[in-house]
Length: 165
Image (cartoon, rainbow, N blue to C red; front, side, top):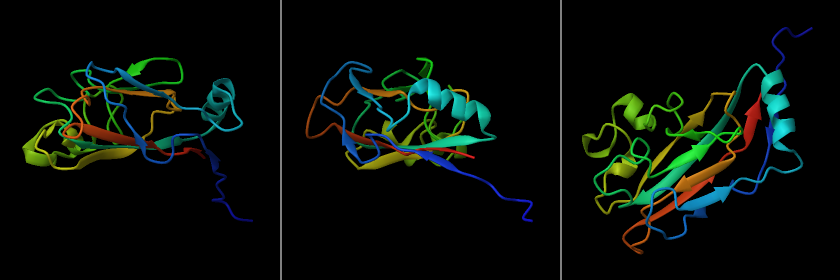
């Protein structure tokens, strides 16, 4: 009998492919509500509570998006937890850290301290990583702003399947 058998549950949704952030200027003016296939948020809460661990991969692609202010710590972008809480951090960091994974590792573009998308240098960049605070998962919604000046300010996002084991 195998002692280390692990069952994994994957829950898909309508935002797994790259989605363009609609042009708008104000912080969080773009909203994308994530619609999960065949499961309600209550069912997903039960899944995360019954699971040992859960995570969800998130990615934002950006080009000259946030000016001179940090993207997540200054509230230009955030994600919304299953309970409707505004979370100001991105994948690969502690919840509400105001950072992206590169900010946690200390290797963001141009030596920045928070996110690659803060670079504002007309170079395509991305911030990505796993969200793993199962008490907040799954991602219910993403919000972004400062993408009005197309084609010089533009962003795309993708959200991975909820994965629990």
